[in-house]
Length: 141
Image (tube, rainbow, N blue to C red):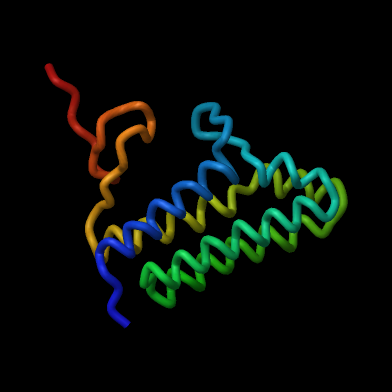
C-alpha cells in the first residue's frame, strides 16, 4: 500500500510528540526523562501509559507506511520496555532509564525520512522558524 508523503510526515510528527512526552520532557545532555519514566513507579499506571504510547507509535508506523523490519524493531523496543516494568522496583528503575519510546520513534522517523525525505517542522516547534528535520545548518563564520 502506497502512503502519501503528507501522511508519512504526519506519522513522523506524531512519533516526535510521543518521543518528547515519553522520554524527553526533561533533558540533561544525552539523557532525559519523561512520563514513561515517572509513571513507571506507579504500579499499573506506568504499564498502561507505556502500552498506550507504544500502541500509538506502532499505529503511526503502520499508517506512515513503515517497513516490516522497522515495525518489528519498534515492537522489540516496546516489548522490552513493557516486560521490564513487570518486575517491581528493579524493573521500574530499568523502565525509567531505558528510552524505548524514543528508540522506537527514531526508528520510525528514520524509515520515513529514507522513504519520503525529511519532514517539515511546523512553526513553533522549538521556538524557531521551520526547518527540515534531519538537516542541520552549518554555523555561519
